[in-house]
Image (cartoon, rainbow, N blue to C red; front, top):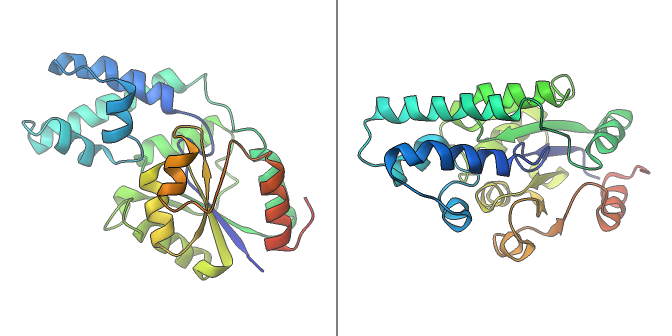
Length: 222
């Protein structure tokens, strides 16, 4: 039986993609760079700011890139303060995990200030005893290390856990760590998530196929 669930944050616990996209879109006009959804999906989704900015604005110094990333995230937090809600079915799933002593962790490429902000706004800051931040380990997603660290903190083998992810970058990371991965098509089409290795793709945590799968794999009724 499985014993733990590892959750991505952006696009998985809550849908933040529109806010991130519009914030980047506005800030990058100062650099004469116009982005559209296709460009955003290719260069931004699921990645850490240092990697994004190295690719799209290579002329920036490291200090300039850090400052721009910090400015973007501060603006994201300002815009997102009143708009974030948990993805449908998430709170029910977390209650089920708590009743049945199923381990939980968040594994994210979000900067630590954003991760803590989102969990606070969603009123989930006390629901996850383990928070793995990509920039605080040697390699962030798409490297498997963030999920490997999460499994180590949970004290479970990959075969006894599952992951929820919404981005190709995140799925590459979780699958690379050996985790059965459920994709959420909140930000990317199901076809792309399956192509990256997702074993199941759902729209939210109320999906009937997902409910049946969790009951079977964890041995507890939902």
